[in-house]
Image (cartoon, rainbow, N blue to C red; front, side, top):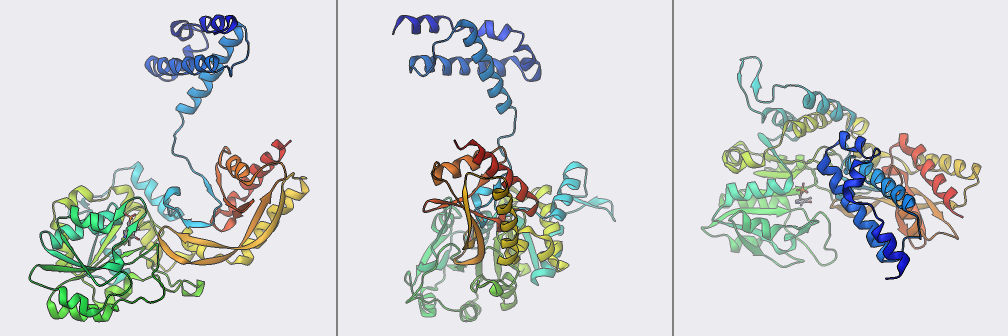
Length: 470
Ligand SMILES: *Cc1c(COP(=O)(O)O)cnc(C)c1O
């Protein structure tokens, strides 16, 4: 270690001296002594490290003191902010688990805030003045919308699948086609859930082909259920088939075995006008006579994280009686957001009120119009980024409809001085983070998933970035 370096390291003030300084006292008042003490230790360690690594410049004692206080202030401001933040999703992926899946409607936000901030009749029968059940709020709406006899709600669809299996098939066998033994992102694997629910997996058929006869031959005294799983995030194409719903239902009826369907997304709108043909509708399964279905509340339904279990009363009640239901039930915030979301469907206002459904409905022309308006702002302000419009596709995402995209118009950004990944990084690190896609050497902005009221924020962030380019 050279002389000046050891001198500097010796001259880093003590933790106590920093804690007692006038600048630091307000931070202690705003939080606590222990909290600030830990921050000071961390900041001093970082600075010592910078000297050791030779990154720090030669500096005087007062420089060091000022540097410490500056870093401390920065770190403090950072730590007293929430870490969970809103972002602008300009990737064009409508449902992204990493970005919190479906944004809630205004109706859901309003209802959620009202219920969250006050007392409510969550488990209270107002007319009779006695204890009530929290089940009724989603149940009455799901009965209307899906045509089911009964419905309950749990924390998410993974919990729904688990609870159904444990309630209806504990210590028994569950028949599943080998083509449906799927993994959904973040380690939700059907075989693992089955094992944990104490049901025994009985695989039938092959990966690409499962025949009705395969199910038929596998049925025995221990068979408690046939589970059909929507493959969600992948498709087996080409030489592949599985029995249709009606065939499978006939077999189940003849053998007195319930058919259960994990539908994944719970899509209640017809997506075929948008070129998406194979997203199952829960109503179709209920109408056909499936014993129990389940799906996510925050995928194509466009509501809060939750898992809907719906079907015949006999089975739903059995699931409801499982003591584990109590551990997996949803709270009042989820119920409020879900109730408001389902009310939009009941009133047939989903395309007007639910952001996800609105975004699916956006035409490429309307997206183009917004993109043009944004690009005009860039050119007017003499942006150092080259930008042009290009055709592309928005993806549904969230484990839905992997083969289809919605035709969209993309703003493509490029710079001779800054690589696409640097541009992407800078936008991501904006005060209001903007998430984009990088393709080849361009950054792509898809306005389909950007709320129109945020278009100005996109302009602002891109202009700031452009200004920073030397
Ligand atoms: C997404 C999905 C799940 C998991 O649902 P979560 O709501 O994320 O728990 C289960 N099964 C299928 C078929 C899915 O697509």
